[in-house]
Image (tube, rainbow, N blue to C red; front, side, top):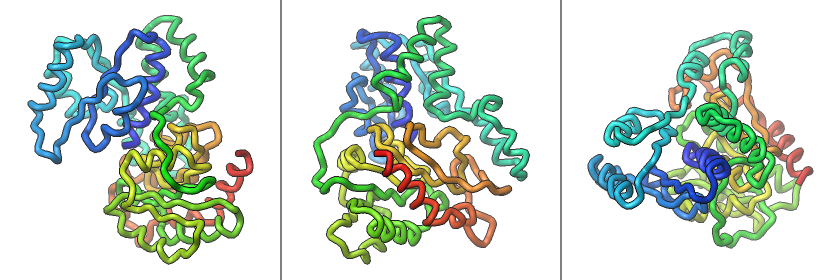
Length: 341
């Protein structure tokens, strides 16, 4: 989900470069199609419903039908996987560009078990800057003209200051102002301990007048622990909102506090500052928050990053990379951001 949101920066930049006559179609899994189906810069969203039984030939047919109606001039492979490579082969007559996902750099970073050596992985040398900046830089050089460089400068200081964007949605009925807590993540080991989130919620109640909202999916049953918080200023929406409704909640928040996950990327796409907590993954992978007021917390440890996705079980008896990030630290960073709003 986060990958899809981050790619909106590419769409926005290409629009600024190519002008209003360019048309963009986006291919993604069905569960993420609602992120972009009302995006102002996307003409068509082609969804692939693997869980619903769609076959590969069904996806190819959808793209072929679009190509017949509105000929496709260029394929931008923003994911660089075997699946996207297969798709490019299916339409081999159409020119394509593929994003460099810096997989080798990330792989080597996971294999080095020395904090001192890892510090040498400077983003200027290894290209491990935030992904939104990285893609713009790569495409800027691929277009090979001065217009791209000039447009990129204008773009960064223009209406898309935060680079990513999502469509405006109807307001979800949660009393403002509020802070969103997003305690879930795609993998268990990327989650800051839920009891830390509960303690953080209590501290925020004590030290601010803001309402608090928990956002999580229907399968995130561990969020039921928040129900022990009895307050008219607290709203546990775990499993109660669709993706679009969650987007609406995030769009009108004062701040989002969460893990290295898609919820924080959605919040930033609406210009909402985030506090992102990194455990087994590394901010240098490119998924650190890129908003001007956002911050992240990550502990330097010899064993992290242990994998490029954060799904590898920890070999230690405790998840130190997460547990060493204290509630006090997250609260302090959050208060610093809130004071600037």
